[in-house]
Length: 93
Length: 409
Image (cartoon, rainbow over all chains, first blue to last red):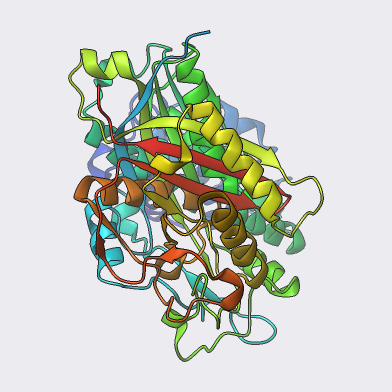
């Protein structure tokens, strides 16, 4: 996936699942503070992203470091790069 | 101890026949039935009948996602009805979080479809896909806390569960809390969502079934000689209960007063209604209200269209009141909305009292011999009355009844 495709897929999860208006979605936005989500939403967000990207995220410690929407894009871009390089993330199902 | 007077200052409904009290009443008055064949329930044998609420995504989305995310179907019903009830009461929004306002909403099954969804994920080895919200949609008090959360209520939040008597127990409990001075206002009533497990269970124990599927609107026929059993429905019927002094202080419109409430167990059977136990519940409610039964102008019967239940309720009414009190049941129109039924039927009865007329039992064409000796309402009847009784009886041997009056100071 290209970065643009990753951004589109992540944004689609935010708009479809969490009903965040598309115009709110920019990389610098903090997920809790700016987008109004909470820890329960984060669990469901991870479930939605797991489904979209075909990976298991529940045990992934990197997830806990995510603050902004840009962090989410970067997380999946990094994961995609690892997969392209032939690395199999320990958490890949 | 002196008891504070408790009045009804708001009403809200979600039903198969409309989502405002006026729309519901209009359809009841026009003899419309909410019952249809539930073709979406696939399984063994013929699909059951049901009276579902035609809920749309647009209706759901009128509730902001922050509140809606933890609501299954029952939570949505309760939230929509609660919002209407609060609006109709013109209750001051700034008072809702003051700790003197509560929420008491009962149901039979809680979020039964959400529980089924969770087990489906487990059986498919997909539990890691379960939403963080699933628990909040499943639990038995899901309707009560979701409404309380949405409204910002910080007083008592309770959820009595007594199957088909749940709504009346909730309203009775609300009455008690306000009468005792514990709360000033409570959003009260019942909600239920329809799933296949309850109708199938009722068919197994022969409380339902054998219907002519080509005429589903004729299936539910309380007190009729050809009744075959109950048809399950769904919805929510909620009222705003308020202490009279609080309602008067803010100049609220008053729909009626709760004069008496009683609930008692049959104590002899899980599934069979019993005329003697129902009569005992009647005696208790009139004692609680301090009213002579002869002043009663209408009985809104529980009458679910079962062979045994209707017979026992008819016997209790006949023995207690004789044949001088008009009687009807609204389950011919709505089916049996289980935990919601007491709330929905109470609200329709309040409207009958306001309009000085009685609505008939839909499909009651030929009263059964074993139900004879009552004054059955079989067409819309002009009738001025100031006191009425609302009955609910539940599997598990639970009886509940509420005595209401037109408000006069």
